[in-house]
Image (tube, rainbow over all chains, first blue to last red):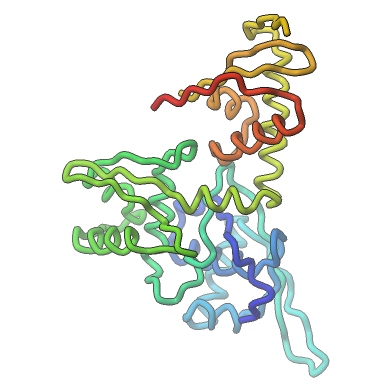
Length: 232
Length: 58
């Protein structure tokens, strides 16, 4: 894996991808992790991708084909090296969904974390209020929401995942601050705040910030707002 | 609802709004509170607005 080509901060995943099979979701995350900085393009060899993911290259290709069919990305023909062998391909990622899920890259790339756990973490974020980054759920509600589509989630797996996620930290910042009691899970996601405050120049954040500023100015000019003249 | 009272420096008008209204008007995809917070902070630095009051109610 070429470290210099890895975006070490975070990966933006279309939320619609949550509804797809876990194999597709994981493949998209790994492709996305090979982008350079904020680029929408990732150039990587299928073989390298298979090594990163720890699966056979033919499964990587199958998953990529499905992602292409579903219009999540485009893939180029392989680059032909001077010796005639096939090299890297270029993946162009599309922002096809209206909403996005942002994941810490360290979490995505950490080989010690079971792949299912990464998926559950995305679902955990999915059922968090994105405005406050706080969520309130009963254990049963949460278990239902974390369940992969079409699959059952056992109580023991759920319990193991929650124990794991509560203890997991990145750069000494917890992913989840937990204030659970017996009847309700209450949590905050401080790492999400960290992402936004340390990535002010990210394309997604910058664009949204500019749109927010325009909206604030529009509110200031709005005829429907109650305006009060101020004497200074 | 997180209410805000903003003073717009160029027009000297005070407007009552909320984070939710800004999110709705800007149609930002992430619907993230911190993006709005950053936008407000920058506008304060640019002397475009003054935040007179901020009420955070759950």
